[in-house]
Image (tube, rainbow, N blue to C red; front, top):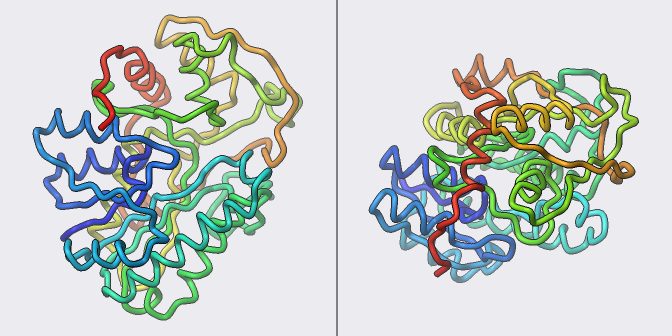
Amino acid sequence: MTVLLTGGAGYIGSHMAARLLAMEIDFVVVDNLSNSDKRNLNALQLHFKKEIKFVQCDIRDRVPMQALFKHHKINSVIHFASLKSVEESVRQPLLYEKNNVQGACELIDIAKKFEVQNFIFSSSACVYGEPITLPIDEAHRIKPATPYGQNKVAIETILKEDPYFTSHCRTTILRYFNPIGAFTDGLIGETPRGMPCNLMPNILGVVKQDYPYLRVFGDDYATPDGSAVRDYIHIMDLVDAHLLALKDGLLGVTTFNVGTGQGYSVWEIIDAFEKVNQTEIPTKVLARREGDVGSCYADNQKIIQELGWKPRRDLYQMCRDAYLFASLSRRPDDK
């Protein structure tokens, strides 16, 4: 089995690469490095003492992508590649449509041509929009509040309606909740470019004194402490769900939530981070962001029952591992 990781230099993709290296599963990374770099992949190569097959390419570039599939005999695809800023998608919806949806269409077409046996798509809990009920199960109404969420729905729909993916391929849609944390011993972690939008990279930016305080967007939600509630999952628990999806499953399209089933507020995350890492995070409350919902956490029973997956790492380990990665001063040079 040779697995293609699109967007494999990014946060989630590079952690998937770490797991595949540990499992000695053959894979290739393709990434255009538009919103990532090779630091995590470089660190993995040094740690595992093994070269990672890497191709710098945009998945919309059909000729090099077809050559990649042919040369490496790709039979499984995990599609991570995506522009992922909710805020940016609101400002530049056309950019997100061109990159995310058109890119996926090109990839899907090539995957069909080369008759891949497994196709795993990285979707998102943002497809649900404002929850009607909590926790959210896979049958919940789909009503994304942002162009980024609309991109994910569009790609899901293509997979669900294409006869190849519904009849001839094991096709898995994984709707992520909120991955945080880092690989064992802080070897690799999240390295966002520019000002990050997600909570944990912003906390780490404050720790490293990149920012004077943590921006808390909204303290007037209908939640116990007024801040937004999310389902945070350790990045390595998330990648383990992909590994199970590669190994198991019937032909056709299956959709799973990947979350812990537990919601934590922004203030609860800050408190846990400060306690486990013995540090203090100054904060400043700002207005809500467009597209943010008050509470969002998963009903994860389907993936537990059908794939035998379950989250193994708690909130304190998520916070501890993220901090450990951020605290390391020596990083491999970009190449």
